[in-house]
Length: 102
Image (cartoon, rainbow, N blue to C red):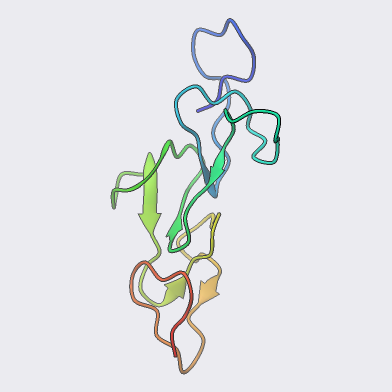
């Protein structure tokens, strides 16, 4: 979660899908380079729903990154279990795939 301004008693914004926000995140804009307290892209092979707070993978706990399911591949900052799409014909995509393998 994100505290977008000082003095809040609790976070006022969700971390955007495809990103995770550590404690202390001050902006929901992952492209702000003037602070390290911003969202970071989820790793390749995973996806993050809105509100994810950690890049560690804990399957079924959606406060954490989730592994890309078998049959799909997930590039960095994937926002859903469908990731970057289904595995192409002639390739294999086991759970946690970032790049389809021939």
